[in-house]
Structure formats: structure tokens, C-alpha cells
Image (cartoon, rainbow, N blue to C red; front, side, top):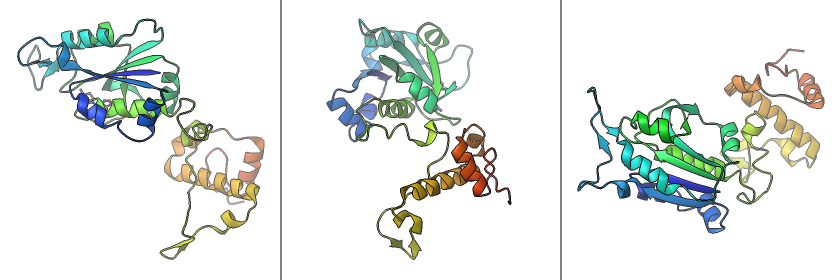
Amino acid sequence: MHFSIISIFPSRVQAGMQEGVISRAVSEKLIELNIVNLRDFTFDRHRTTDDRPFGGGEGMVMTPEPLSLAVKDARMSGVERERVILLSPQGRVFNQQVAEELRREEHLILVCGRYEGVDERFREKYVDEELSIGDFILTGGELPALMIIDAVTRLIPGVLGCSDSALRDTFSRKLLKHPHYTRPRVFEGSEVPEVLFSGDHRKIEEHRFLESVKRTMERRPDLLRRASFSVSEKKLLARHGIDPDTGRETGQ
Ligand code: 4HQ
């Protein structure tokens, strides 16, 4: 899979992917990254990428010409599934489902805006989709682009060590993860739950499942309403006095 990132801060984008899982995915040729310096597509002495807004008002707007030239330059011949994504708080909110959808593309061109945003005509003519990573305002689209590359890359087969660990993750099953424990067995007076030493794998799985449901109920009840449980999971929840729909203790 190919990723192109268009930015006026190419070194910051580079720095954000220099170690860990993503850089390994690059060296193992599971993904290819192409960082495009937007200033390479300016022709004035100051290499300008922004200008004052028509109609007046605060802030600067990114001019459409360099952005359009950078997108045309990033395009690859022979690639059919290509998507130009603009990072912006006005976009569809990115989540695990969107990450899975993007994984099916061959080439993502991620456009990182700065200032107040980009000229509307660039958006209309070149952008396939706007994505937001959440309801807050950042200084630029570079971190959102890195987050999207990270979330999509770990879904590519071979990127994570354990082949199916991406599938068991928190959001593919719409439940939060159970608590994790490792050594030491006692930390500042707190012990690891006894059941985890029982060697009874069925009991351990049941314990973890119940902890997941309880956490989800406490922290993200919105997720629980969308979770679906198997017959045996429902029975287990009922045995522990938990309503499978609300996660609440039934008191029975
Ligand atoms: N910005 N999700 C403004 C974001 C953002 C977000 C990126 C700030 C674009 C022009 N991007 N620039 N939230 O806050 O993606």
C-alpha cells in the first residue's frame, strides 16, 4: 500500500515515522511512504503557500495552485484505487471502521492543511474525502495524517507480529479491553487477580470477558448498545447478574 503526505513540514512528518512498527513496515516493503514538500510546487521567491482570505477576516488560507500541483505529482500511474484525503475538523470522524475501509485502497494521498484551511476550489476539484480525527482544533493536519497511516498500516497482514492480534482489538468487537497484568505479582501492595494463575483457560477467558463488559458499561455505554453477544456469552452475563443490553447489574 502507498501513502503520500503533502505538507509544508515534511521533516516533521518524517520524524513521526522514523521508528517502531511503521518504519519496520516500510523497510519490509509492506507499505511505501512518499513525503511531498508543498513548497516544491511554489514558484515565487518566498515559496508562498498561503494568502489572505477574500472577503476579509482572520487568518490565512492555503492557495490552490501548489496543492493541486502536489496532488498531480503524487499520483501514480497504474494505480486504480487512489483516494485524496484532506485532514480537517469539518470531515467525517475517523474511527476503526474507516481505517478498515481505507486499508482496501492502493494509494492514499493525505493533504495536511495549515492556517485556517484550504481554498474551497482545491477541495472541490481534488479532494475525494475530508476526514477529522476528532472534535478539537490542531495547528495542522500532520499529526492526523500520521495517526491515519498508523491505524491503517497495523491492519495490513504481516505488519503486526501476531497475525490475528489486530482482529481481537478493542474496537473490532465493540468492547473495551480487559485489564492487563504482568510481573511483579505484587506491586505496591496490589495483587494480580487470583484466577489468572489458575491455569484454567476457560475461566480466565470468562473473567476477562466480564471485566471487558463492566469497563465498557462504566466508560463507554454507547459502545455496549452496539455490541452483540453470543448465546453462551449472554448466559454467562446473566449468571453474573449483568443485563447484556445495558451492562447493568440486574440484582438477580
Ligand atoms: N486541523 N482532524 C486545522 C485539525 C484536524 C482534526 C487540520 C486543524 C487542518 C487547517 N485535522 N487545519 N481535528 O484540527 O483532522
